[in-house]
Each structure stands twice: as C-alpha cells, then as structure tokens.
Image 1 (tube, rainbow, N blue to C red):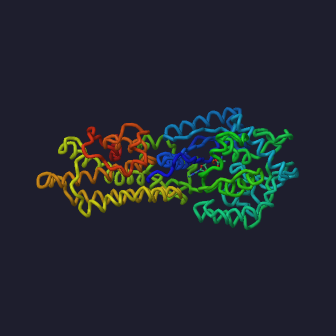
Image 2 (image 1 turned 90 degrees about the horizontal axis):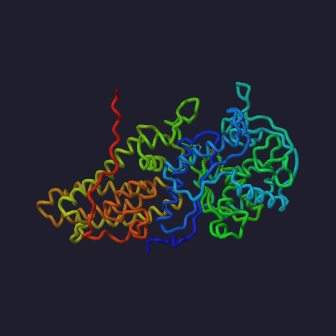
Image 3 (image 1 turned 135 degrees about the vertical axis):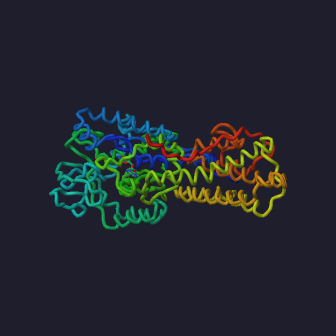
Length: 523
Ligand code: ME8
C-alpha cells in the first residue's frame, strides 16, 4: 500500500507576518516550506487545511502608521495585499489567508480570553518593565543591556527596549511551569529540531513569570471583553489566529472538530517561546487541545549577513522569482539549508544549485533520454527486456524513495528528502553514461530499450516526488512522461508510485525543463 493518507485531516500553519513592511525572502522561505509540506501531504492522500496570513495589531503597526502619516488600518490593508501577492506569486496553496482584523478573529480572541479568565488565570495589576516594540515582547531586566550609545537593548534580538508602566491584565503563566514540563516530557516530538526545543525546555525550567497580556496606552488591538479601555497584548490575539482558522469559537463546527488540534505550526526561531511556551499554556487554560508539533526553522542571511533595510541587502521574493524562476527558488531554499538550521544565500549559491542539480542532473538526463525515445522508440515508452543487476538495483533505490521522503517530511527534513532523490538521480546519470544507450542503438537495440525504460521510470518516480517542491516543472516532466496532463491526475498521486510506466504509452514531444542560468551579458 502506498497511500496511508485515506483523507485523514492534516492542519498546517505558518506564522502570520507583521504587515508593517513588505515581505522579504525570509517570509517566502517559511511559506514555501509550509506549502511544500501541505502539497506533500495532499499528494499522499491527506485532507489538508493550510492557514497563513497577517498579524495586524500592536504597537509596532501603530508606530509605523504614525511615521508614514496614514491610518493604521490602511497600512495593514496595503501590506496585507503585498503578503497575499507574494503568496500568489510563489504558488502557495493556502486554504485561507487570515487577517487578524477579520471579524471572526475578534470573536475567537474574545472567547479565548473569556475562557482563560473563567479558569481563574487572568488578574489585574500594574506592569512595569522593559518592552521591545520591534519584538512586541516584554524582556526581563537580566535579558537586556545598556550599551555604549546610552540605549538599552534586548540582548537576544538587539532591539531597543523602553521602560513601560501601566495597568495591565496578567496571565498566570508562572503556574504552568510544571504542566508544561510534563507535557514536553510526554510529547518529545512537540518541538523540533531538538536543539531549539531544548532551548525552550531550559527556558521553562528556569522558571516562568506571569505575563502581561493587555495594554491601555493605545487602541489598536482586540478590546478586552468587559474592560474596553484595555486592548489585548498582540500575541494573545495573534496566536489565536490558528483557532479562528478552523472555526473557533464554534467548537462544535465541522471544521473545528475535523482539524483541531493543528498538526504543525511552522515558525521561525525568534518566536519559539511564544509558540512552545505561551501558546500551550493559553490553550491548557482555555481547556483546548494542544497542537501536535511546533517546527522551528532557522533564519536566512544574505551571504551570512543579517538582512536589513539600512544595509540594502533585503531580497524581495518576486525579484528572485523573476531572475531565477519559481521552482528554482523553491528548490534552492529547501535544498540548500537543513530546515531548522540558520542559512546563508547568495547569487552564486542559487546559480550553483540551478546549474548542477537542476539543469545537469535532472533536466539534462530527462532531455537526453526522452529525445532518444522520441527518435528511436517511435515516441512510445519502450518495452524493457529482463532486468540486469544494475537495472534492478536502480529501480529498487528509486522505489525506496517514497518511504525515505515520508520519514523525512514527517520531521520537515526537506533537504534530506531532496538529497536522497538527487543521490538516485546521480546514480542514474552514472548508469546512463555507463550503459551508453546511444551505442546500444546499433549493437543491441533491445538492451537500449531496457536502459531507456529504466531511466524513464526513475525520472517518473523523482518527478512525482518532487511535485511538492517544484510543482510546475515536475508537472511538465510528468506530462512528457505520459503521466496525465493535470495536477489532479491520479497518475501523479503518490498512490501511483508503484504502478510502473506502461510500455507502449505514447509520449508527447519532449520539451526541456530547467534551463541553465546564463549571466546576463553586460552592456
Ligand atoms: O514574528 N529568515 O511576524 P514577522 C527566515 N507576527 N525566516 C524569517 C526571517 C529570516 N531572515 N525573518 C523573519 C512575527 N522570519 C509575528 C508572528 S504568529 C502567531 C505571529 C520569519 O513578520 C519569522 O521567524 O516578524 C516568523 O516565523 C515569520 O517570518 C514572520 O515574522
């Protein structure tokens, strides 16, 4: 049996981005990875729900709007459009693009507040401490430092903090320490990768302070139920988006019952505490089930240097797509850096992957073998003779890829899955060179047929499995391999993987995929 999905629900989310600016390649990285995961599960027979969107409240949004001299709602709407456009240009197959200014989200945020309050976890007090607007986070004094410029910074994120004193509602986070530690122990797969999860666990072991969860000095947020001069701390509202996305507060709704708890929240390393500490505590308090996994990815840096507007090294995802091609960008991002680790990108690195992995090892092999089939096999999948040892070994390696990919995707190890596929492609290139089908054409045409058949069969398997990463190019290759003409074709689902190519299948004329990158000529 190849398809274990059987329509099982699978709910996956990205972080929702602050639309205080336009998206950069780091945002694209997260949505592409999540999209790849969603596509993989769909092709494997799961019923996937995929949520992404924008996080529109909070002081950072208000201050950015003030600087630009426009109403904050206008800023949010303008940039939410830019995020949506980025998603569309990256081929992101989301089910819903949520904005935290959506009406149903207000209902969800109010309800989680009421539930936490009813559970005795919210009390009114006074907050005084350091707040970073950039991080939308409170930092204890010992996690800040006064630097030579006379400004105090959050040590971990290098962002300026300001002293804040106001009346505030608090959440009894302190009383959740043991429950969280017990939960982590019972659910060792909850946080990943292990090294980042360990950081979370030791943070919780170090003790938790109650959390200030409302503000009174500005109004751009969800009003606190029954206490309208307070707005909710933006993270309370933001995290709740994952519930809104499946129909909360209607816990009896079909979608809530079907998709909650979420299978995976995909997020970046800077927001792991919010997702792996605060969020489970809020949910425990509200009497709701906890997500199954928080996958914490690393950050991408430009040639190893953090992206920043002042350095002028921020990459706009659409520019990359225009320059290199969408599937090439998707492949590069997932192949280059193990998901979870920090990574670096550069023009040279993208071109290296495009030319060696894609153009040479994949595109060229497909073009050479398919052209031979077009010329020498009447444009039909040839009939193989009996398989020799090298044929059988290669087919067995390709046949094992589905399980390798499944186990890698279970842990969001995209680069491992791609590496396994490219190892098989590398072996197939070596096989093709060794077997010399262009010589066999004259000396042993039957053997040539077998070699071409084996090569096409490996290409089919790799094309089917690379669809989640490179939907358009993989589809093109499947078309020229005679495997249907549309995405939904059953021949393209993972369940078709163990149905080998049918000899005699007519093939359309091959068209090259994955062109080599040529540097634009100067002048
Ligand atoms: O944190 N490389 O929003 P955000 C990789 N609104 N990923 C990066 C990155 C980089 N250089 N820079 C940012 C927020 N990211 C909150 C989330 S969720 C309920 C609320 C990732 O726009 C970052 O780690 O600052 C986060 O996962 C996502 O982009 C959105 O970041």
